[in-house]
Amino acid sequence: MRDLPHIRVGAESVTFLSNPESSGTIYSIPGLDYAGHEDILPYKTTEKQPIQNYLFDKFLTTSDNNQEQEGFLARDTLREWQDKNHPWLELTDVHRETTENMRVTVMPFFIGSREVQQTHVYWWRYCIRLENLGDETVQLRERHWRIFSLSGTLETVRGRGIVGKEPQFTKANPAFQYTSHVSLQAPSGHMWGTFKMERPDGSTFECRIPPFSLESKHEDGSTPHGFVV
Image 1: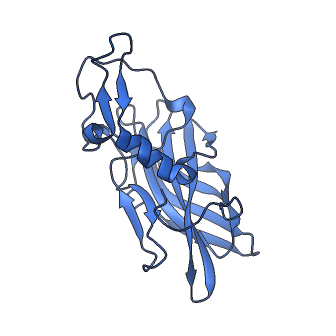
Image 2: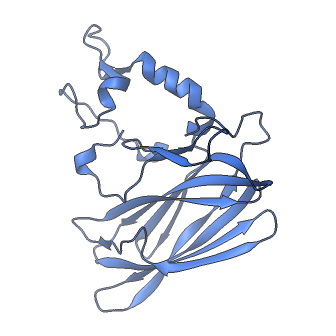
Image 3: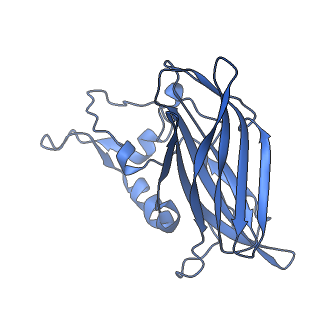
């Protein structure tokens, strides 16, 4: 769960596809996020509610009745929600690459598939985090994506900024995170690309986006429909 007043991200939510009887719209649950194991830090608090998130009291409770166990306990609602959506909550991989002190982290997730005009369309959500590990201020100006589908197609996508922004990365605000979606008419594919970064003197460099796989779960017995996260 995010500490909502203290984040610097694009407008994003954990997303899932609606049930197969509906139009296949992508729905969202705001306030939740994914994290790689290396990004999780131990934290001890004395506050009853250490983060401001509307889901905190619904999913977690304090362990006041057990003095030997510190921290918070999962409520039944959280366990039930995790059990129901486990195939879609499981993090498959985290991809990282650093170019000139700019680190790009990518986490892809399969969120379901749909029949659209007798064609099977597979959907993925991917989370991108950019971090400036150096002292020099840089600003993101452009994105360049290459999307390869198992069907044999290769698509190129270019554009200004990301999610309508051109974020600046400084010592005070070194990171920015956003999510987007991609669909393929094949059960798997690959994505890779670059971000064009600009220095204060006007010079630019290409920051590499690590290549990552788009893998569906259509072969493991999990249904691609229903409430998927």
